[in-house]
Image (cartoon, rainbow, N blue to C red):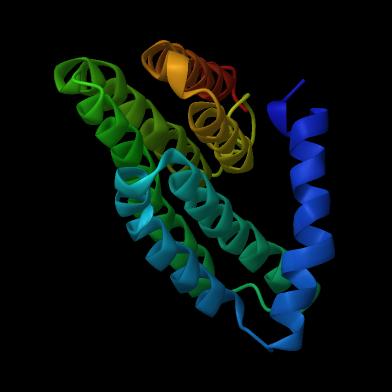
Length: 202
């Protein structure tokens, strides 16, 4: 079962549909506007983590929510376009980098910047590969919407990781390492799942 089907991810989607989506409707925001809002908030995530992990958590939550709602809004209004899909996918990669940079800042603050690079650099590569494999498969006429860590699941996991770091500062270094290893393992597994799916003719 994909992580998006787990209770935590389902609660995240309910939160979006009952709070952020109505807010976007009232302000008559377009999907591409939400996409840009999401990436601008993501760019502030590293600064948020410099201030406090709770600030980083809130910024990831807001950025991820804006990013997820742009797709919901596009489908609701039947206004999805190739340009919107391209913009969303491209800016998502920038957001992914900003999120992980925020966690690296916590490694740096804890006195382990090199360890942060060792753990988060391959995690970033795996994150980018998840999207690249899907895009390449779809460009070749296939279908590759498989794997544990689709984007919404990654946002949920990063939010949970950041919240744990904010609430349990006494074991922050342990949580940093455990969270980075878990994220790396799950994203790398998703890359393998998608490659195997394509190899089987998916």
